[in-house]
Length: 203
Image 1 (cartoon, rainbow, N blue to C red):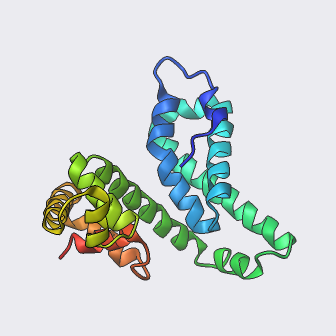
Image 2 (image 1 turned 45 degrees about the horizontal axis):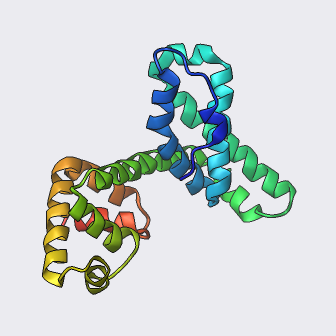
């Protein structure tokens, strides 16, 4: 994920409120926007623009307890506008029909929750011991087989399996059964490597 130069050029207030909000919500909002738009570049642009617009209304950051809701609502509205623009360009009639239907609000809420859980999973993967992290990355994010991961890391298959088992055990403890079940119940199918990893932690 890229972090935008416009954001980096902003002079933050002394309490670093803006930086805290950006670091906390940028990845989650990108997951959320991409789910609505199915376009990572456009999703990241919208999230960046949302932060800049809200920064220009600095009073919003004085109500930091509300910033999460403000950000998600702003990104959702910007994504809806982007879908309408696609419709005007005759590029996404079916997409517009789907996302602007009566169930849009519940769909958006589902994707907010999904984005939060996926971001949590990514964060926990990065916090694993380095050996486990490397193995889990190759198996679940690169989609490699146990044998392929062993060859790339110069380890034997039994060592790869040991690091995988240790990583899954750590994730079970850190994430908790509720977060994992929430994601699976919200998923129409286990369609991503991260979703597959979440499912595996239940086994």
